[in-house]
Amino acid sequence: MPGLLLVNLGTPDAPETGPVRRYLREFLSDPRVIDIPALARALLLNFVILPFRSPKSAEAYRKIWTERGSPLLYHSQDLAAGVRAALPGWKVELGMRYGNPSIASALARLGPVDRLVILPLYPQYASASTGSSLEEVFRVLSRSAVVPPVTSVDAFYDEPMFLDAFASVGRAAAERADHVLFSFHGLPERQVKATDPTGAHCLASASCCDAIVEANRQCYRAQCYATARGIATRLALPAEKWSVSFQSRLGRTPWIKPWTDEVLPELAQRGVKNLAVFSPAFVADCLETLEELAIRAKDQFIGLGGSSLTLVPSLNSEPAWCDAVVALAKRQVEAAGATPALKVVR
Figure 1 (cartoon, helix red, strand yellow):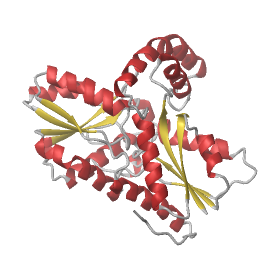
Figure 2 (cartoon, helix red, strand yellow):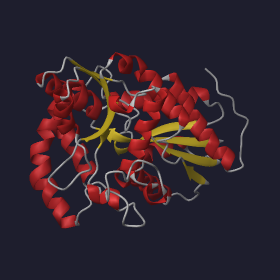
Figure 3 (cartoon, rainbow, N blue to C red):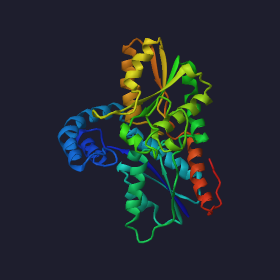
Figure 4 (tube, helix red, strand yellow):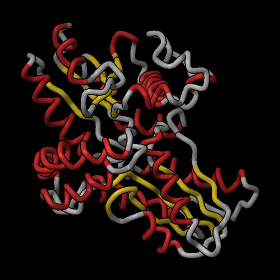
């Protein structure tokens, strides 16, 4: 029996300072996330970030917390349940890179499988998300007496079913809007440049992300632009009606641009009144979509003279997204030449 491990980033156990501090400590202690020398990372984390950011983040989490708890967690759990129902003959579990349920606990629940498919729920590749999650899965597996054949799903930033699903979810909002903004999570520039094998393409020109080529094939920023182009094409958006930006920067190190909080004033100055915002770096609504965009960015845009900012919901557990996840998982097993008799059911 094959097993499917869905992996998302994670969330605190509660919207209070203590649980948020524990979550941030685990998250930001990861050298793939804050990629500076260990001593400098420890000093920054313990004397700057944790004391000041934990209470502020807890307050932000309280704004989006629901009776079911963290939106990221329950949307991811709903997705896992939908995929499990559509994959009879498979074991399907959800693990979080940080926090609960952990990757280790998810692998324990899967138990023995004939083949393990890992699906990191990050559309675009980044060392700080996909890379770290895969590293943790293999670290846990390395302690097992028996390690099954393992395969992982590549970044699916240009997967047609993924793009179709996002376009479908956001079509009505895009049609009502004067402009569509695709806001992706940001990364430090050095992490983007590290994926360029030539050392001469990424961020070297204004057009470096206009197409996927060998030099930027693993570049997060280039993959974000490819995702935006794919959705914009499906929505038949003219070039002047959509743009790309990056949010959630941290610290003083250079982060990839343009920045969302600087693009919003530019759009307002251009006379954009009704703005639709997609956030297709995330497949489940979370703090970055529900609080950073739907609350803070909206307040900023309205304060600049805009009339409305509509956040397009993420894919969450939409049926079309469940179908896409099922297809991605099946493709991995079929490519390995071990195709079980499968049928997608609803």
